[in-house]
Image (cartoon, rainbow, N blue to C red; front, side, top):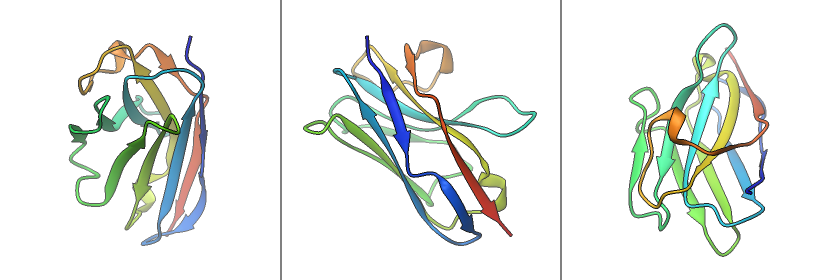
Length: 121
């Protein structure tokens, strides 16, 4: 069983930056960040393989967000720059019991409770 705890969300003005963290209680393999805005489906934002050598980004965040991990700390990060109002959502961390990058929501086995990110215009 893996427990995930996100932190780092908050309120920021458009153009600003935030860094989200996700601490895993147990060994977590492939990791991902998802987000869900009110009335919308939960969508993938970024994903990273077990060793961090492979990453994936949604088109909407490419060039602005960076996913990284520190396996010694069992922590995954999402650096978010040049934030836009449309980035406003609850951001969720997820873990999959595989070592490769996972982009499909249904393949993730564990989920955090989410952290709110609000970008004001």
